[in-house]
Image 1 (cartoon, one colour):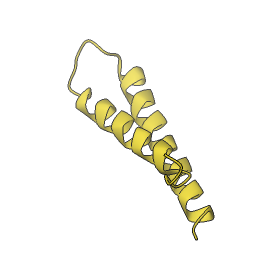
Image 2 (cartoon, rainbow, N blue to C red):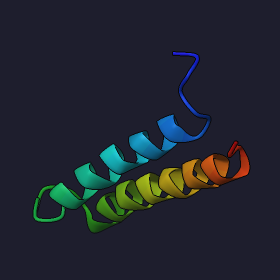
Image 3 (cartoon, rainbow, N blue to C red):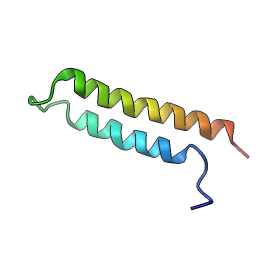
Length: 58
């Protein structure tokens, strides 16, 4: 696990969370605010992971 680049885990986690939020868009039982928050949370992780990947390039 030491060979995993810094920022890769948050980026992958963000991708999974964003995908989950997009999959929940058509669910009528969940409020739109919650669905949007899940998508935003995932996108934030993708952006922060990408920043870490770019900053710690070798």
